[in-house]
Image 1: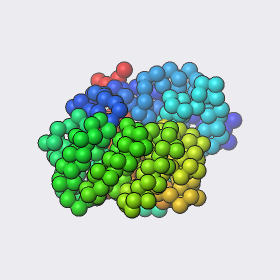
Image 2: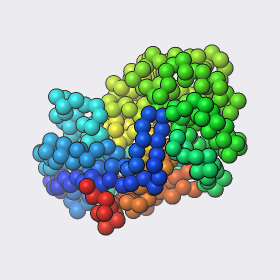
Image 3: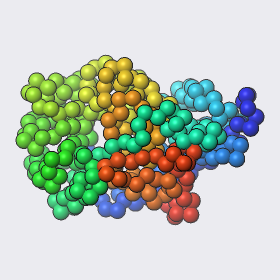
Image 4: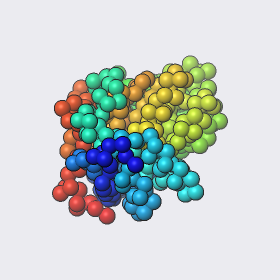
Length: 369
């Protein structure tokens, strides 16, 4: 029973949208030509909170049939209690994967709703530590030719002011090494990151890192599968022993606090990545940030820059936000209030309550599944 009758959640709405990419895309282990967005909206006291996740349209049925009864009528200010109920309810479904993504979308909508009910920007509600956050340009898909690669990376660095960019690798070692060289040539002194999406074995990842050492790569993301904690640690320790200043990063597939804890306890990463569209929303992201604070690790936000913006302004040890090509394009198309990139940073509009995003329903309708 809500302590504030006016804060009872009156309605839950959920819908899925499938948006084609602007060109075929691929990384070291996967190819795709569209992105599916699942949007949750919650109404209370004349306000609407919005959350979303990048997952599968099957989440619509899960949220409608499994979460609606718990959410509707609940106190919009009792997020912790409702979050625990949501996690408990999926015990026999399996917490990770789709269930975690569904909870993430609901949790983000709850935090947005609470901030709107209080007429506060979400960053202020969460306790602002910084007024803007740096981003790194992320794309460089293995499906791109050199011309497209140069255009994308060059635009981020020389026009948008990004301090770092990231390219995908893992499809072909010889070709990958050449693409890394092209990237370095294009961006000059800017930071260069690579992402294998788990395509390598520990030995091949270490060998590739040595092969591109002269290109001054500063970040190796998922050199091996993030499920291979021993392998991640092996790569990290080998790079450290060789004197290469190359951080090992992972965490985008961490769905629960236990997933993050295991990465940290095994010494598997230098930087922990967290994605609030997967790891339990704002609540889960704050838990990951607390872990980074306790273990003196850097924290980086994975994808969904518009949704991460406010919490990134509040999280301790925050390093940077991924400015992922697909999500930047989709969020600017479908959401009013998506942040523009300025001098390599994005900043929240503190005149708008909540996270400041509203769905452009007329624009989104054509992509509705």
